[in-house]
Length: 474
Image 1 (cartoon, rainbow, N blue to C red):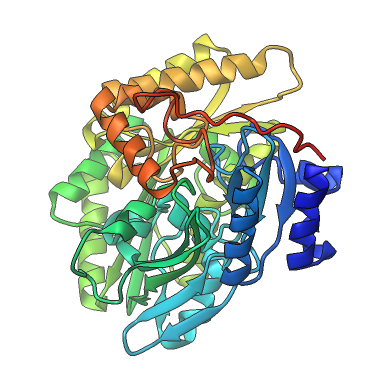
Image 2 (cartoon, helix red, strand yellow; image 1 turned 135 degrees about the vertical axis):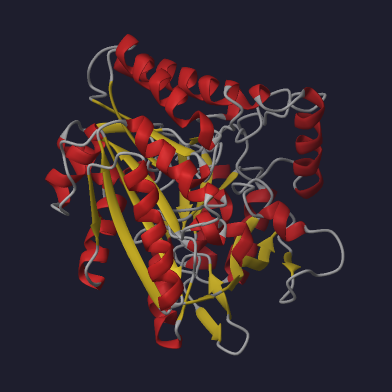
């Protein structure tokens, strides 16, 4: 009876068409872009912040966990419920209000990342963070995970481009955190919410900074017979005082998969390819591009290609951003890691990643934001094969430990979610975890939002787990 009452209250608010309670639709929302699946009690599709606030109040009265969700492109299980939960899909919050004079925009959480830049192109502006999934991922999801992308080397990740957020709290209140000023007085609660993975509240709107489109850009592709030479080129470029707009690397297995998928002209006989882009004033761009070329040549690049025009530049970037989709040619499933290591440890860690793949008998390929050491080792596999998922999880765990041991961190842009939650003690002390748990408690004392994510059980002095409410299966 309790379940019926809960669903009826949601339907009274949104109508039956925006409350998804049938088994098939709940099944669809039980998974994100990763490999885990969770239990969904019901899905709601609000279109206004007022509706989101009322949904939260209803869920709170019924003691049902709430999991915010964007487009479901996340790879760490951040939008996957750990117990039967209410999933709040924010994809209908799609308003965009641009202030050209201040180069800012209020953006609904459901706006697609690429759509925002398309919308602002007429004003000569764009949103700098550009995840590979930017054609599908939402701004709300970017805020949840502090997403990055190839062009965040010079510009910074999402947190550097968010001025304020509109947040629905566990009490169903609507708060504005941050301001249009770049450095407002008081606690930086905006910075706390960005990257919190939906554990502190539901972000419904975001005030973002927009970046002027560069007057000139030049994209270079360099091929190498050794991964070590490509990595040395990355360090050499930075040592010359250049911070390119982007500096990406792919190993040979990934390059082959991408070239078969896109046909961008990547050399498949190279051990590694490096994609570098410099932007700015035309004269400066020309000079920096020549310097990048010189560094690559000094590190034994076997060939260097400079994109002749915008069409060729777009094709090269299409190849890089299609890397994850290209894996579908090899296997029906993949597991993608998101760890960070110092640039000087790239070669050392990559060798260990290959060794781990061999020991666990897994196909692995690598693509990474080489400029900031953000690795994306990708394991391709068939989940229907007995025991393969156990090997994948064991290998992924070992890769994370290797990266942390090299002085790195657990995530650069994908978040912690479920996948790396229990590895948090590798990086954070008991005191660190307790402080983070206290922060969550201050925002959400009853752990209504996205429970069991990011922080492992026991992070606080007591068990942070939330008991599964009885009788909420539909």
